Structure formats: structure tokens, C-alpha cells
Image 1 (cartoon, rainbow, N blue to C red):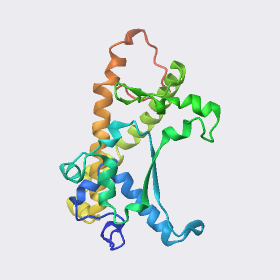
Image 2: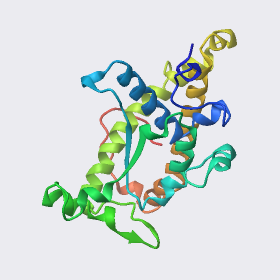
Image 3: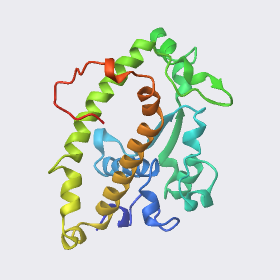
Length: 227
């Protein structure tokens, strides 16, 4: 029996279509609550009650509005109210405004408060979505993401990678995989494809259009092909 079909599953599956649980951020919340349930059953660290505390800036309107299916919007007008409606025990879920971590009386360091002070600021009615790092910090972060992303994409998309394996698998093999796992794989591949498309179409093109590539030396050492 799958975790979501178990009578003690913390999330109700009768209010929205089953597959609508497997989109972000609902899927991650589902996983967290399933983990919390198992920790509670095992009395981990002596706990009798385990709650999921979702730490997020209260000003993050984009996250609050992450209702990606019509069934989500039928239950409420923001993520947190909808999620509570889906829980069998709503008291097992709490939202922590991360702005409290940088409030004057918070027990965090002055350095922490300065670095994350943007959590309490509002810009055009919405949360400021960018950290106030120096430009070089952002460049370093970008370069790190590039190298990690390149490695992952090569392993996923190369001959013999996961895409190749799934694409070549016969239908009867795929049908033997439990339905939740099939749905999760399909959803994650769709999300990955959309993420790559958005990087190439939006911020990626902003870099591409600004560089004179004829004057840029090839500093790669892994033999990767250019995008």
C-alpha cells in the first residue's frame, strides 16, 4: 500500500485529483508531512507530536499564490490555507515568518540580521527576491551553479543517462513501476524541462546577448559541448 493510500496518511486525497499533489510546492509539503508522520510513529528523539514548520518570508507573495491547478484554487486563495484544508490534522502544520529571525529582539547574530535584512523589506508590494550580496558573491554563486548544473545535465542527458534509460524502456516495464513513482518521474522531468527552457529563454539569453563569444577563451576542462 502506498503512503498516500494508507488510512493514516496526513494528507487527504479525496479533495483534489491525486496527480495534483505531485506539483510544487505541494509535493514537497506532502513529503515533509509523510516524514513527520514516520518520526511521530517512531517517537524519534522522544517526540510524541511532530509538526512541520514551514519557514518562509511572509512577504513572498509569489509562494503564497502557488496554486498551480484549478483544484488548488477551489479550496482557497493562498497556499497555506489550501494546504491546511488538505491536512487531516491541521495543527501539525505551522508557518514561520522568517522576518522574525532578523527582528531586533531575535537571538541571531548582527551579521545574520544584516545579511538577511531584506526579509523585512517590501518592494512594489512584493517581497524582494534577491539577496543583498555583493556583485562578486553573485558571480561566484552563478559559476558554482553552472559547474554543478553542467555535471548533472550531462549525467541525465547523456547516452545511458536517465532520459536515455526511460526513453528506451518498454511500456510493459514502465507499467510495472508503482503509479506514484511514475507520476513523480513524469512531473519532475516536466519541471526540469521547463526550468531549462526558462533559463535559456530569459536570464540565459541576457548573458548570451551581451558577450562577444569570439573573444572569450574556452576555459572548460571537461570537454563539454557548448550549449
